[in-house]
Length: 418
Image (cartoon, rainbow, N blue to C red; front, side, top):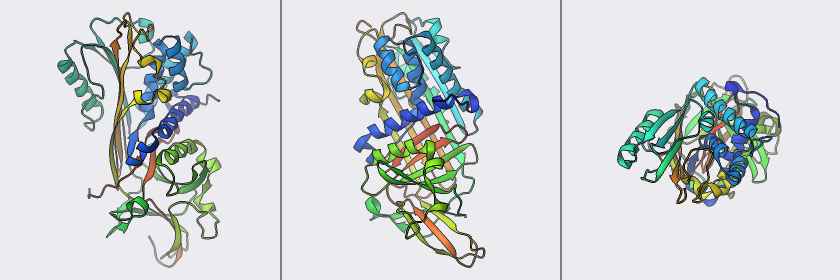
């Protein structure tokens, strides 16, 4: 894999590794994704790199595989330095990119001394001390979360107890306004599939058809239709719709995997040539629209959504490489002077898509415990309508690097007005 540099010092190799983690997570969600979810693999990824740098041999191998940087000597100092550079690259990107923020935090119990060589790997971060009084410490951590998510999340996902010696956390926000605002469709429309009995308050947008509106990708999960909604900042949101009978996790996981090569491998809507003009793209119909230019138009129809999710990362140890490291024992000898293991690993996420724009926040935390040892004109023109009127996936992506920031599955539309 190449090490093409992207904005903020984050390499193309690191972006691919982080995005692959996000895709694996989506696939592993299985049937639970169908209920609606949002998640941020990039919120977890830096923590895995930092933990791997201080883990024992087996933990470092598992965490290194989940971190996924090819060419990293997971067992040696070169690999450790590589992980630190990659994590600082993520933080640097979020610092430079408009609409993004990322804070890191580490809190240790007064009794734990952290090794200086491991601390040197950390990017700029809040550093605090746990007093051992859980109520007091929890309030301080919750205040940090509230501050660094602009009030969108109010609680640290991990809950403290006297046995917690170390907490490592990330808090990220994504905020953008659409370049072209969506409009609310008067009267709404009837949904299809799982939303067939629901009158949807649709958001719509008509644009002159271009190769940057929508694509059709053929994946092992069948054809997936992608639509692009661009933000005023360097943030894009991709909507993705598979065939009605396809599993949510499969469409989402493979859809995320297709994003990296979408413009090279998928068929843009300007080249759709099927018998009905759709190439069997899910959610697509062709008709006419009033026009005085005769230029083909593409209409996007979708629903607003507002999601919140809580994830227990330890429930998917193979995805995150946390199997060995979450078993009691001295699992992180390179971190500090006391035997510790990962007792909790959780993420809380909120995501909101409206006619104005997109907002999301995610907090990921890992706590380590002491081990027991340790908008149209007039005339006619072709109109291609892409309707997200049944459950669909989404991904918010940093435009310059291709880094997936937040992704999820919309199982239920937001029916109330904003």
